[in-house]
Image (cartoon, rainbow, N blue to C red; front, side):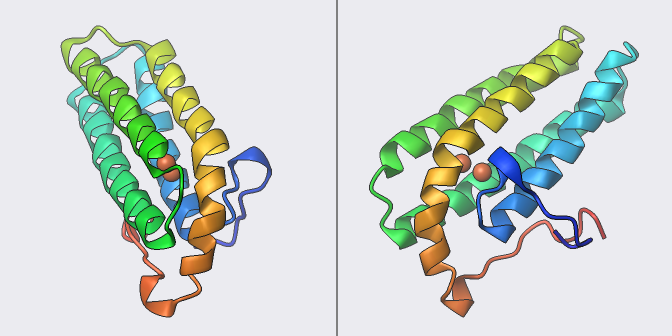
Length: 147
Ligand SMILES: [Fe+2]
Ligand SMILES: [Fe+2]
């Protein structure tokens, strides 16, 4: 991460650019969760949920691009799980906008993403690491989010 902190444990994929993306998605989603916890739905919370969704979409597109570049064998299952999470995310956004979501929904979404990282991301990251040794594929995204 840009501030020198390092992921470790089950969320570490071994690929810095993916860890950075995950971290940013979780920062925004946790802000949304805290907002929902206070039980005062505001446009900021809804915007935060949409922003997290955008980050997530871009991140999935990046991972799928890199999986293809790496010739990852289990691509279809991984991409299918991205679509499943995207549907959960879209429902969450709807519920936040209508006032139906509470902080448990945000926590469930975060946990679903954590589970995806622990199963899928950590597996294809091993293949992706190999292609990231090619300098032009060292992609960095969302750099502006944390300054
Ligand atoms: Fe993924
Ligand atoms: Fe990921």
